[in-house]
Length: 387
Ligand SMILES: *[C@@H]1O[C@H](CO)[C@@H](O)[C@H](O)[C@H]1NC(C)=O
Ligand SMILES: *[C@@H]1O[C@H](CO)[C@@H](O)[C@H](O)[C@H]1NC(C)=O
Ligand SMILES: *[C@@H]1O[C@H](CO)[C@@H](O)[C@H](O)[C@H]1NC(C)=O
Image (cartoon, rainbow, N blue to C red; front, side):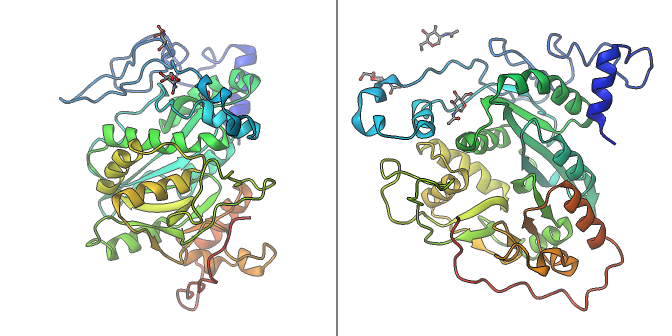
């Protein structure tokens, strides 16, 4: 079942309203022009004022309404800059552009006490991953009186054709599920750090009543049950930040590598400790302080390393826990362990599972699976390097 093919079909015949299949009476397709009374998604253009309505006192708005940031051409006269690869040049030219307007917002998302906010990085074209997450670990629910909510974080497609094709679909998807946050910056690998800082600002603006945050990728397996168990055992911990932490990771200097960093961008031998961005947990007060810390640093092109730098500013040490496998369950991709549901049942997050595998594993783990005991979590095998 794919809602997008259905939407496309109805668009083609433009008779979606007559058929009465969707409750689209006048509100959705006009959403980008009319301002709504409710504080819901209002996709404003980049030059329009932000149309977030305020319900309570205070500054409850996204205060960036125009994207007006031009390239820092000063750099182009400098020799060290001219020698860099194109993607680093692009990053550096726009590094000073810190905040962008919101295209889709949900100021109401955190209203009422929320125990856990699940925050998932995604991109417009990966709607199948979002569909599966909504049906599995990303379900909004109340567990023992504790509310779980979720949002997906998106920028705009970097490719113009994709932008034209996907924006309306994305708005429709959000109309149905109300779980998309979108900012007006290009979704690219080096812009993931912008996604991090924009989320931290958004969270500090709208989520006064949230206790914990899970933040991760859209291609991971997550056990919400184990998150609850872990958090309940950690209720006394201040500045909680836990994940698949790398200590003394070295910046990668091989140019072919996805994570390559030239000396000009980072001179030190080691990165500060940081958690793999595939999935980690933090408490809300810390997230607010991280926003403050992030504002004091230059942007760094690798998002999880950047967050490690922010933690360092706050002098907070992230905790390494073996139930977070953001660099894979075991190093050997063909290992049988990668398909063993009893292992998944004892994990908090495992990278990397695409939609069919995720559904399959989710069903296994949530069936009447008999595991002799909670499988002892794999022992760490030194610090894995990214490669
Ligand atoms: C954008 O910024 C430039 C320089 O800061 C300024 O001259 C221009 O008027 C701004 N444009 C808008 C639409 O605000
Ligand atoms: C570029 O250089 C000028 C003059 O040195 C300076 O005023 C300006 O702030 C610089 N621009 C940026 C974006 O750093
Ligand atoms: C990040 O997004 C901005 C705004 O869309 C864009 O100008 C910039 O080129 C992007 N940077 C990278 C490194 O992709």
